[in-house]
Length: 144
Ligand code: TR5
Image 1 (tube, rainbow, N blue to C red):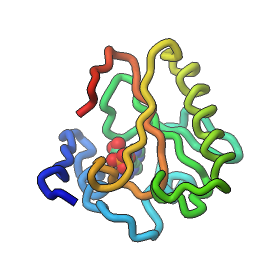
Image 2 (cartoon, rainbow, N blue to C red; image 1 turned 120 degrees about the horizontal axis):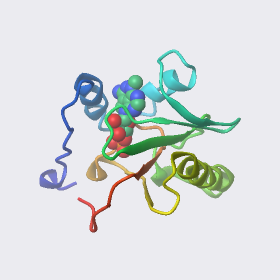
Image 3 (tube, rainbow, N blue to C red; image 1 turned 180 degrees about the vertical axis):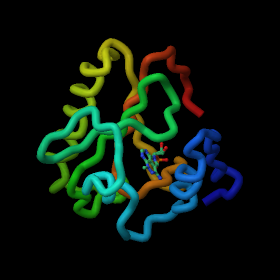
Image 4 (cartoon, rainbow, N blue to C red; image 1 turned 60 degrees about the vertical axis):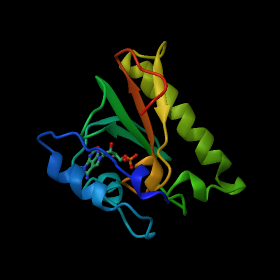
């Protein structure tokens, strides 16, 4: 990897310690992540949508008025999208359908962005596949 491309900015916030810890976990070691504790409800989160396969909750360090993460409840090897195999097709489709439900619930269905950061060069900090659902403001293009 090109080290100069691996600068991941973490916006300071009241929760900057938690975000910094997540950012520090900048490699896929296959181990449990903070999201396991959120799924188990051992750590509180603001849940926006939940079904038997996915959980959607507000990001602790929002980058837009609406910033929700959608994650599979069963990681099943999907630490990041780069691990996707055809057997994951159903859950990947389910995550996208859940993203649309979240956008509807949040009132942003006419304009929202879905982001998956894949790996260190994309600033992924939590190695449990997740979709970022962002909206509620004018998005810019290209993204940073
Ligand atoms: O950088 P990537 O794409 O991996 O996104 C991980 C996201 O998880 C970041 O946007 C973080 O702000 C978010 N995050 C990290 C923690 C956390 C969270 N969202 C909700 N609740 C959280 N808790 C309780 N703890 C975190 N470390």
